[in-house]
Image (cartoon, rainbow, N blue to C red):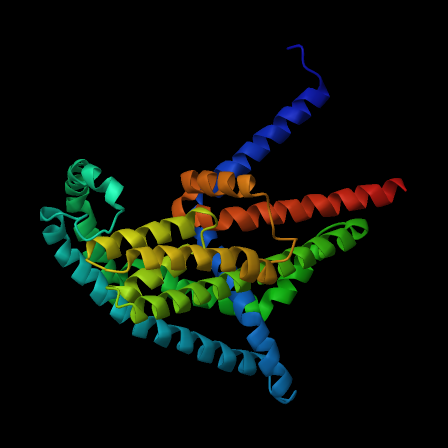
Length: 347
């Protein structure tokens, strides 16, 4: 009647369902974020749980051994976060209190520059002061809020409570959940689904462990260098830069710029030494440590990584930037498996 056939209606219905699914995922993105973070934490703790289970006698129930390991691991993480968080929060509050004084003074007076650029210093200083005055009213309260939230944890109370609980269920019932999903598919497709789950498990496990080690490495080296050279706010800057290691491409650059800006405005006398250190460490991490921790299965073209990070920020902010790379890597693995399946069926 309307000039459409059955196939056209099926395609339109499929597109409608897909659009509805995308809309629902977007609407519940905050809940999905909690489960995704819990899943990554479970992959991070899984090797420790497996190691302890090999040491504990088999007569001990798995739930008991899992609970012991889980509580001990979470306790160590919480104690470390409290110890570092108190120092970071104090430095954040100190920086926030000193910010108005920095804005009134010449923020570039302590920055060493080549003699040929000295005539440009007044114009650059005037421009920087104008921009800083525009942002000063926002930056100060934000730093104070960060400092207080690190101590109290009020801003992330729901996540602090829910993520460990969800992680425990993933560790305890992960295999059963996986088997239930696989068995829900037809028998001829179960092997393919099982292979995809295996690939995704290896990908997520390697990705989160590699990022954690890279962030820990960055925090350690930054803290040591800043402490030895007498830099201010060393724990705040090292912790901030380490957290940004979880955001591909953009994160390390923002961390380096922030570190140089804050130390330069605070009168740090070894800014150029810090520049050299950041360049050398970035080369080491990007070309030595990073490739060693991340296999070819996780690597994606830099342009695609940059696109994913920027698109993820528009969709879900900072969490979207973090999950963009593993999401693209997971889609790549699924496509590769489907292609192999199709090629095997044709041959």
